[in-house]
Image (tube, rainbow, N blue to C red; front, side):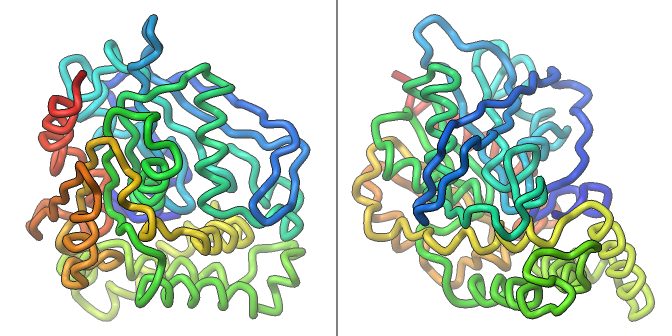
Length: 352
C-alpha cells in the first residue's frame, strides 16, 4: 500500500516495482484453483493465484523457496535492489542458479483474485488460513512441489510462515518469519486495523462497497499506514516542521488514492481475523528463525511476546535487530542487508 517512491522499505508493499539491476528477471504466471471453498463456507468458481519465479526446480524438487508478502502488497515487492539484489544473485544466500524461488500474490492482493476485479463487497471473505491453503495448492498442485527448502515471509507473510509451520510441519526444511509475532492480532495492532476498517465501513461514500470513486476513508487508511510503517526518528527527519509534515502526508495520500482500492484494503485488513498460531507452536518441527526489529511499532519488543513464545517452538530461536540509522521500523523486513547473514546461518544449520 505504501509505494516505494515514498519509502525505501515499507510496511505494506507496493503497487509498482522495478527489477533489481543485479538480479535475474522473474517469470510470471497464474494458477487457477477451481471451486475454491473458503473457511467462511463461501466458494469462488475460479480463484486465480498470480506468482513470480526465479530459477528452476531441481530434479528431486527440493530446492523450492516460498517467500510471502505483506498486507496489501504483492510478490513484486521483493523484486527490488534491497531484497532481490541482496539475495537472488550469483553467490548470494538465495542464488537463483541454485534455488527455485516462488513469490505468490496472496488472495485479494496484486494480480491474484481480489474484490476490485468486479465482485467488490460480494467477494468471499477470506482469512489467513485461506491464503495459506491457496499457497499450498499452488506449490503442490500447480508447480508439483511437495517439499520446500525454505518458507519465509514479511509482515503478513511472516504470520503466514508461522501458520505454514503448524499446518504443514513436514513440508519444509526451514522457516523464517520476519516482522511478525506468533499470537493473534490484539492490543494496538488490532486497534489501528480497526481504525481503518471502521473508517471504510462507516463511510457513507463506501456505499456497501458499491462506490464509483474511491471513498474519502481511503485517505484515513493511507494516513494510518504511513503513521505505523516506520520509526519515529526517521519520520521526524523526513518531516521536521509542521509544513513539511503536512506536505509529506498530503503527497503520500494523493498517490495512494490513485493506485489503491478501498474494498481491497478493507478485505486485506479484515483477513487477519483468524490468525492465531499461539495454541499450536509445539507442532512446528522445522528449524525456525524469527527476526523482528526493535523499532517496529507493529510488533514492539517491549511486549515480550516473541521472546516468551519462541521457547515453545522445538527448534526455534528469535532475533531482534537493534535500532540504528539503518533500520526502518516495520519496513526493516525488506532491507535484506540487515538480516541476510542470519538467513545464511539458518540455511546452513538446516541443510540435510
